[in-house]
Length: 186
Image (cartoon, rainbow, N blue to C red; front, side):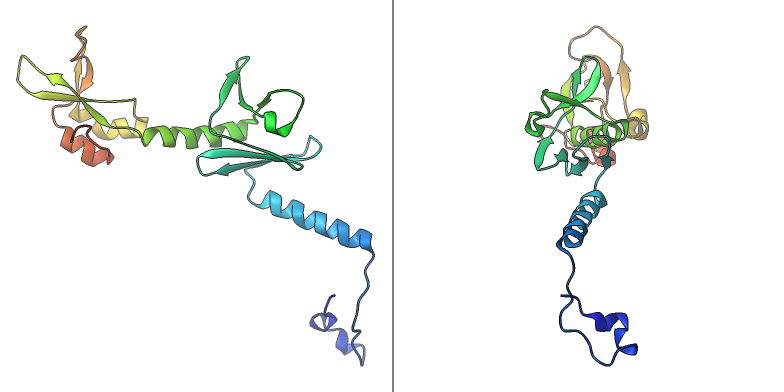
């Protein structure tokens, strides 16, 4: 029931109708339009080239894809035939993997990279026989921005030594403070 008074109908009529009848088809179309609008509101990407329409969402550190009543949530991108794709068996497409639109790939890879960088830490590599200092290295490659902040605190041990090799620091507390990362074992 719709209250027509809020639309100023009283200006033209002396009485207000108690009930307002609307055809079921219009109500159904209105409900569908509201549902579609709600789905599109938070969607990262909407693929209207397929039927039913496919909606892509970032849900924390996962990608959620909704198509019709089917839904799949994934936490990684796979390389299938040289193209980025996700395992989409839950969508019941008739095939196991779904190629991702470029916009979705960029946004989801950014989320995955941030998730990986949360695991960044300094690890003890060894003690130098030359200067007696303890050297630490990063357990994974940092982002370009992170590296630019701390590169000056690292020394390149360009040796074939299995322990003291690559970029290492003798001042892990400074690097840990700058990057806000832990030092393993401390």
